Image (cartoon, helix red, strand yellow):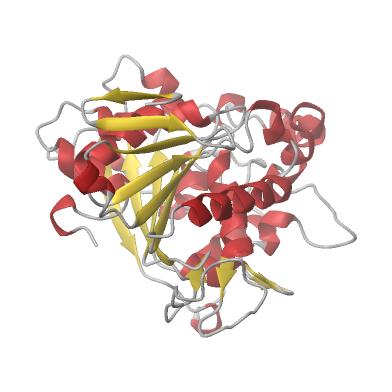
Length: 364
């Protein structure tokens, strides 16, 4: 295979734009897949961060999925801003789809910052239901679904892994600062020096022409941007979160919860699936019908409450993970990427399928 590798029936190759494409080597499987899984790495990352997991997904569902590990925002390019990276990712996805006309469905699996980039990208790719646009670059034969389409495909699963959905500002959102208020305030002030425009946006310190911070805009259909409509178009949204030992992204921000909503995971250990300690299915909440939230005297702020409330307008499956018994627990932020599929647990196929959002026995 030119510029690629073949291992245990899985073919991996470098795509034209530098990403990694992973599919089954079996021609009968390759002729039947119709589901694109886009995998997005985190800050300073690259396509190789997801390569192992991508190969496992293809082994589990060889005749169903074609996996693309994104590379358009590699390394230092991750400091350019969530919006800039989102535009690049959207363009990359369109390029992949144009090369694979048989694709009909799409899912995203994103780690850390990549989850925010993917949320921005899907807005750029979103088309409302029954909308016709002669300028669309995709074939008109791809029928838009009842909740809209993503790049002309049916949106299936949107999966984030240790993603800071509520940003990184204060309130123990960056665990390595140990909740020290002075350090958290200092981090917010100098974040843009280290992490550029991306840092400004993560700390909710960006101010584009007087607009609210980007992460706040992304929890509603802001202006002509359909952020929440795009997110709500997916059949499933799943948030995987580390309950501890993640020094980069806190449990609350990655699981989209308030302090009072964090479960006591020690009482919820799951003997069936390795590392998974708690699962919760959260229904969508209509903001207009919800009672006003009384702000807790715990350091939370109004912007963070806006983010939680806005993202709760769509349903989420929240899966809490702990590596408390692992030798690699202090690297939980990166280990979570592969551990759910690397597991030697007897339920390995079930765990691997959960990451792409549906049981392997009833894959859609």
